[in-house]
Image (cartoon, rainbow, N blue to C red):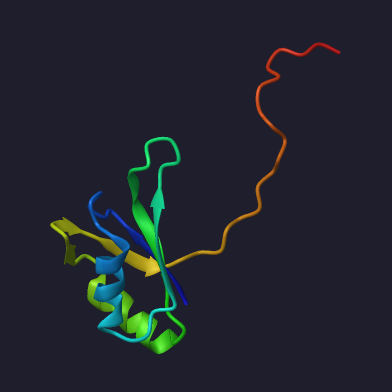
Length: 95
């Protein structure tokens, strides 16, 4: 199960995030999303756990709990929605 973790401390490292979830079972992967321009954490990330029951236990136990001084939000990740790649701009076009 893919788990979304939000409102994290910007100093939280992937190791401490992994450790928090590993208390509930096996963790396949752990990824904190970084800003590509500043290299700083965006304050959210994803954890993948292969066992859905363990993942659900982790979600219910860790949601609204403290991690590195911040109260985190933990929930099942929603699948990405396809984007319409129409580009941007183009405002006042006359035909």
